[in-house]
Every structure is written in C-alpha cells, then in structure tokens.
Image 1: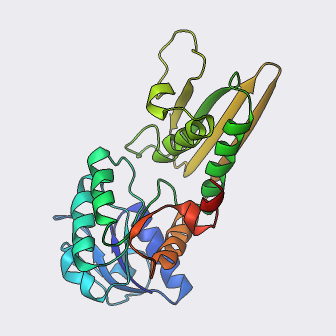
Image 2: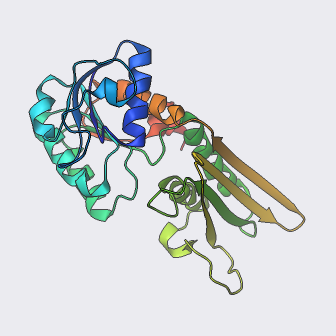
Length: 267
C-alpha cells in the first residue's frame, strides 16, 4: 500500500510511520507538513526515530499524490478543505483522523465523496468504534429517564474539548434515542439542576493521558457504564492503517470506522 501521510511530524503522524514500517508492506510515497515546520526536509523514518526510508517531508500535497494509493490525514482542521480538494482532484482516497472539524469541512467532505472514497473518524481505535455502537444500542434500549453523562481525559497539549471522540459518543447516544444531538448536548456544566434528556460532558486534561472515555447511563438505583482506555497511541495508528487499507478500491462515498469493522449494516 502506497501512502501519503499528512501531518507527518505530529504525534499521530509519527505513530503511523512507526506502525507502518513495522508492518513491512506499507510504502510512504509522500510526507506532508505545514510551511515552516522544523520537520520539512527531514527523512520521515529518521523523524520517527527509525532508520532513513528515503521519503523526505515536504509541504505540497498535490505534488506527491501521483504515486499514492491513499492519503492519511492527521494534520490540522484548518488544512482539511485543501487536503480534500487535492485528493478529489487526483482521484486518491483519504482517511481523515483530524478532530475539531467544522461544518464547512464536513460539507467539503460531502463534495469530495462524490468523486473519491472519504473516511472521517474522530477516533481510529477499533475498540472505540465498537464502543460507539454499544453506546448507541444502550441509549436505544434503556428508558429515557436514564441520564447520560460522558467523561473524557487526554494529555495536557490537546487543543479541542470535549474531544472529537467524546462528541461522537454523544452523537451515538442521541442517535440511539432518536433526538437531535445539538438540542440535548451540554458540553460544559457551570451549575444548575440537570434537565431531563441532557447529554452532559466533563473534560480532564493532564500529563500524558493518551485517551480515556466513559459513558454512564444513570438511572434510579442503578448505573450502566461503558468505556474505553487507550494506553498506547499505536492503537490509533494501526486502526488508521487498517482503515486506509480497507478504503483502497472502494467506490466514491462517505465512510466511517463502523464500515471498516463490518458493523455499519446493523446501525
């Protein structure tokens, strides 16, 4: 599989590089970073703490797409529109793991998906993908008087809060209940009595926490808790590579991690 990694010097970019080299059957035909980044011009393998692989970090995605089977993008939300347009123009599938995407980015993804396969995942862990479906099913099955609260924790450098994964869990719960997420979501509590039907969020930021997510369904006299704890960033890297491999050769369209693990048909 011939891959272009976008966001090459980021935490996930380096983790994907290491995981791909360990697999042995992935070739990097391009590595992209932002203008002015210290990584530009360096060998991708050496950047990841490994022997050189002969792929140097550059800044122009369009230039390296000619030899690519798929693009994996873990860069910045501000770059997503341009990356989608470049891939659509070149006919190259793209996996986007960047979080904090706005409505414009999702609209651009819908346009690109008319021409290429596009997979957007707030979290590429296979375990989190299963958790999303479990949350959806729990919300669908439990009575509406069970309150839903989501607690997430990440490292001190994470920029968005609540995390994209926490929001995805909230959307899964809302979908299970058949309600509009934006109408019931409470991203931050500052006081006051909890209202019936709300989906609340709490955020922890500190140290080097890779990713903790817990969804609690709290009823009278009982609680159901579903959760996932990531202890190694490599799980996201392996999941992203599995998603990329799955995406190659698919027809144009919008996909998600549930498709990758074969659960989309029961949603």
